[in-house]
Picture 1 (cartoon, rainbow, N blue to C red):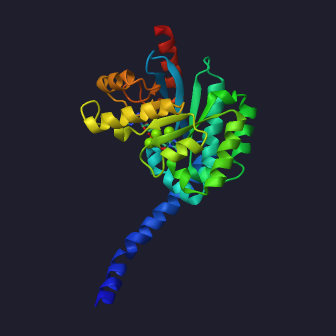
Picture 2 (cartoon, helix red, strand yellow; picture 1 turned 30 degrees about the horizontal axis):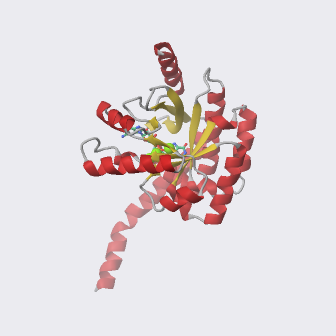
Length: 277
Ligand code: C2E
Ligand code: MG
Ligand code: MG
Ligand code: MG
């Protein structure tokens, strides 16, 4: 009986599954076309020094300006790009664009670019990064690569070798979304990260939630003891900003400072902050 039901269930879901697969391959085709026709954009979100409020860097965040669907967030296309491997080309495009644009800014703030764990499985990643720095003329010390804990699930020796090569180029490595994934503490000791970005899920309930407050405090202290700076992501209110600044985190990133901005708006933002200074 179970078998019969299983079959019936299978048949019932078949059209939906087929539809999902069709939608996925359509999205895949669309993304490949979009790379050719330049529909992707890099937006920038400023990070400020928690003590001075001065802009220290910007995080590059990819967006897809779809001709019919409008602006699409990375959560809606990065996962599929990771599955199909297209993220390797898309990631290289983001890095190239961010480095090119940042090298033309009239300030030497740093630029942070996200790398997918999938990009780490390509042995040519360090060469790719070095090549882009060379062609765009961006000083390696101005580039920071953000990596999530997911990368630690892969072959550890290989990951360490890749991170070491990247570090040797002169770029900085940041552990993104810290505290949400598997791993953490022992990796911080063994891998050459110089920065921790505390995931915004720990910030959401600040400053009132005592557990969140304790966790954020502990991560900042631990980072400082390990010689790492800490960025707090997802700071949306003045109260949250005041809390993390009092805890002496390094940088603050979040809507309270600014939402991610398209390139033109980001340049205006930089101009406005320069005038205020
Ligand atoms: P992420 O690297 O942790 O980036 C921070 C995300 O938090 C961004 O979402 C940003 O818009 C959002 N955010 C910043 N401040 C606040 C805030 O105060 N409140 C809230 N609610 N959200 C805030 P976004 O741009 O949608 O990107 C989502 C994720 O997609 C990124 O998380 C990153 O993992 C991935 N991503 C974005 N661009 C790229 C890329 O070029 N390559 C790769 N591999 N991944 C990317
Ligand atoms: Mg990031
Ligand atoms: Mg993050
Ligand atoms: Mg995140």
